[in-house]
Image 1 (spheres, rainbow, N blue to C red):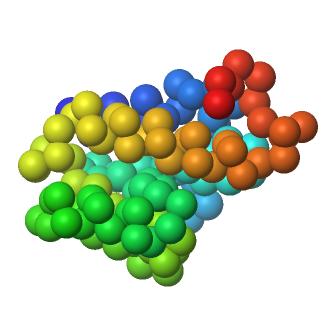
Image 2 (spheres, rainbow, N blue to C red):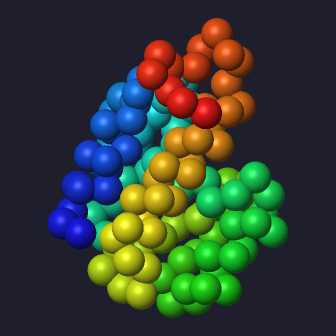
Length: 116
């Protein structure tokens, strides 16, 4: 996957929009919530409701998945692109992160066109 393609995928989701909460770091948000941290070779995504669910990625890809600093206890991982994790799995992880974040939004703030 080329740099930027993962973030482009995230931003194509209903209601998604780019933000730069820290200079030089672009994230994808839905409503006011981040669901994807974009990087040149990595993405940060919510990989599970619990840390235990997200740990499945660490077991499957010990060289290419890591717990995200600060928010990892809430199921967030950093996934490295171009390694053992396929592009399709990266895109599916973004889709999962989006779904998990949108499901936590009040129904009145969920984007139009979102199918839960």
